[in-house]
Image 1 (spheres, rainbow, N blue to C red):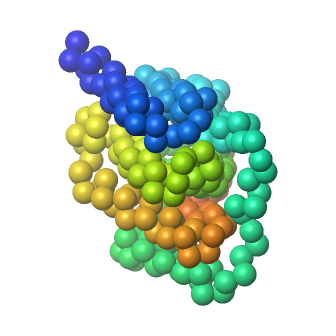
Image 2 (image 1 turned 45 degrees about the horizontal axis):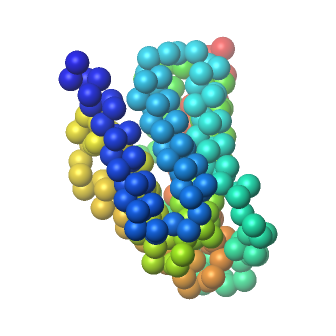
Length: 241
């Protein structure tokens, strides 16, 4: 009984946050606010009630696809073209910062561990089929772009001003990426500040460049080690089969 209450608690939390922003008129488009809540609800449902309970590849693929789909869905409510928010990089310094800082951070975080060893360990520890690792690597790549579209571009486009967009992005980005802490307290609360720092970094790239291109590049570089690890794990799995 206690576990059921814990599973539903995040849904109540996100609903409260949504109503809070709605009452204070922080977001100027109620349809997008509804979709925002719908996205979070569906994501929590698949994360909490299906993950690690059903080994079906189709369900695994659906979880990944729905996550991306609900990220980019609010774009259909845009009344004008948002392509002007994504431009070709023309600032070499910002481009280097967007590429090098995430890669250097991940290098020190891995503490000299080989990506090939981590990929082999991922395969041996999970013993999953190659298609799982292939889908996961594709998901990590597309997810880097989709999250920037959702947490930065969409929230900026539909918010009344930059400050509101940043606050909303901080709140949702940090909580969604720390579900383990809110569900089971298995992760450290310091991880919330960890994602807060990276969210600030992505927003800073936009503030200095007036384009989200650098943030997308930085997010891809941040996820690059995990993408490579998943690709290597799929290679080991294909080798064994």
